[in-house]
Amino acid sequence: MITCKAAITKGDGKFSIEEIQVGDPQADEVLVKVRAAGLCHTDHHSLSWGKQLIIGHEGAGVVVKVGKDVKSVAAGDKVILNWAMHCGKCFQCLQGNQHICEVASPVAAGGNGYTPGHADKEGTTKNGVPVIRSFNIGTISEYTLVKESAVVKNQSEKMSFPASAIISCGVMTGYGSAVNAAKVQPGTSVVVLGTGGVGLNVIQGAKVAKAGMIIAIDVNPNRLEMAKKFGATHTILADRNDTGLLKAAEQVREMTTRGADYAFECTAIPELGAAPLAMVRNAGTAMQVSGIEQDITIDMRLFEWDKIYMNPLYGKCKPQIDFPKIVELYESGDMLLEEMITRTYNLNDLDKAFDDMLKGRNAKGVIVFD
Image (cartoon, rainbow, N blue to C red; front, side, top):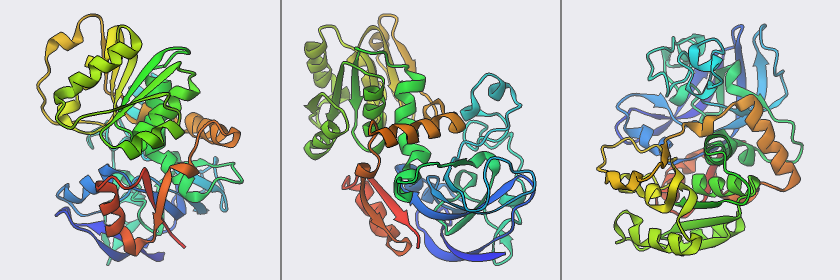
């Protein structure tokens, strides 16, 4: 049993740094010493979910111990954590949709199919009482105990832990939305609405897919400059008063003749949920990447004609395939990860890290552990 520090919320919008106890792994479990944990807006949202939990769902670290049935990693291995665990046997897994596993995914299953195991009960406790972990991994903790499907070995010798940590969600969601979900084709035109961490990785995914034109749209000129660094070929500085970004859509049509082939919403602003539909041509593809879950009103004429609208989860991630591919692209210089990390923080500076994120100061902020 290891005693360590973790960021815990009671679900009341606040958090505190407290001591928890993490047990030894059972047969199919892996004990990981977390070295870095990425931050995203979901982590801040989790502070208000109305329940006590260890926050964090992006992370990387080193394996400390493994259970007797674990084959893919061993003690001492560097690993990237994966929150979308899968069983490999349910209907969706057999369809190739590991990211929406009906048994193990903490999101796609809605909590209905997942049966909490040792790691989720007596394996992680505070003062002897089980404490749940955000997305069943709770990465803003010095140690975490997870299922084998929640870790992927990282073979890179040069990648830093902060860089590998952000692959866990922000990088994978953006890259995968372009490459796996939209299947961006070479020479096509792409629009990205919002150039935060996820949007920048949509841009990188579109670049990897050899898109001919990548148009970044944001209200922040500094972020648009950053978007150029990550692969945007054109930028549009949006007006905050441009309802539904319809004026920006007119600029896109002027730049692309008839509208873009693909458009990705990465703003997490409910009012912009339909905005990518206004950006694409007839029979174009619109992606709502940021996971908007509020009720919105949509002008159905935006769907005319033959447009496709999709809300992909986690970039249709297959972690054992996609994570090594991203590492390979990093090694070859075709994806920038280190450059995406604006600032790192220690655990006691988590308040500052959240504030910087909410005020748009960072592309990605990362908590690092000694």
